[in-house]
Length: 147
Image (cartoon, rainbow, N blue to C red):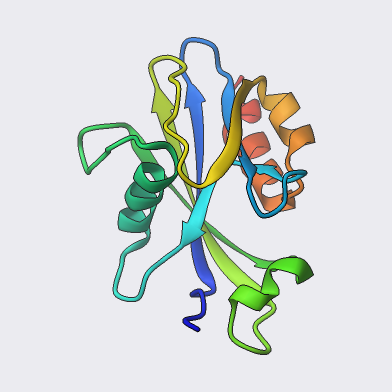
């Protein structure tokens, strides 16, 4: 079994015209809603991982300079939820996450490949929906604080 890299990206996607945030429902935990997220592959830069994860999870092709993908210049360390630790090497309990924002002109219907459902919701509702404290913090810091 190949273990996940404990270095990841979080991409908060929002629509500029509505200020609503895209939330995705996980297949492996249907009670868990989140922004786009995923592990950084070995040799991959965080921005490259963010671009790849956006494509893999919602079918939106972005590359440097084509969409306003913003590196928040923030990374945090968080404790991996116990029920997801089996994906990581033994004794790995924490992950370092790099934060990004992706502003779309308007809400778009994503092409879901890794999730059950999606919702565009008000930022405060997105904070309430997610089980991830760091996802909630990113929305608070980079979406709600700017309103």
